[in-house]
Image 1 (cartoon, rainbow, N blue to C red):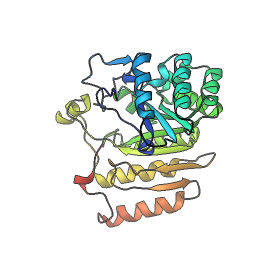
Image 2: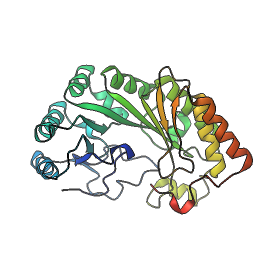
Image 3: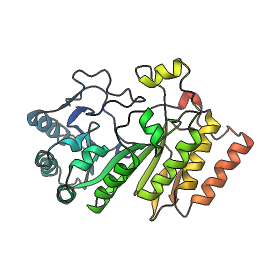
Image 4: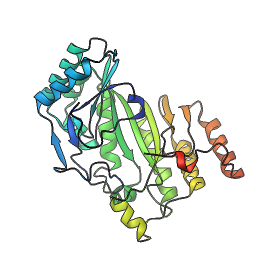
Length: 294
């Protein structure tokens, strides 16, 4: 397989066929993300022959894939006809594949027309993973996300209106101690307004090759402690007044407390459990520091 750099995928794509279509991220300016910082060039789209060879190789494995994931961080930036060509070839070579899934940043989603997204859905695009990180405008400015709540909501609606399931991720701790409450409150409210099919919380990890690391080293960014991070998780869930059922998780390896819950029905119970841990400072059920990872 012609994998270049660090090929990342959501936890739910662990058993998917992973085809790297782009290398890097077209935005690549987020202060916390070091995944693609060392690539040169920073972003490129692979040529069809390379993609085709990878599909052929993956299809030759003695494993019946049910899902395919198109990496890296910005596949929806491809022209729709090119995406359709890739998707059709994957399904031609792998008739058992039921869904093809991608990361989609807000700008890339908004470039697609409703008709294009519906066509992609009909061709097999079933899940788009959208990184929200925060619902707070000041936090989004500081981390140079390149998107804000209004256009995030517009992008989310476009995806779901096309019949594609939406999975959104947010980052605990990304507002630092200074904006911890505002970040959590506004993030929960934004998730509630968008009401995605799936929502996941990760915890920010400060990586040496990032701008956030420099801010941390200079004392400009102070990371909340583990119980303050749990309080952010509590505030997010409390403010998630979803309009339809949402499967919420915090089972990523970066988190201290793994949670799997359906909202709104599990909301009160999850909040109560988190409050109990914070009140008693009980670390026995928290993930140990050495077990946390990206």
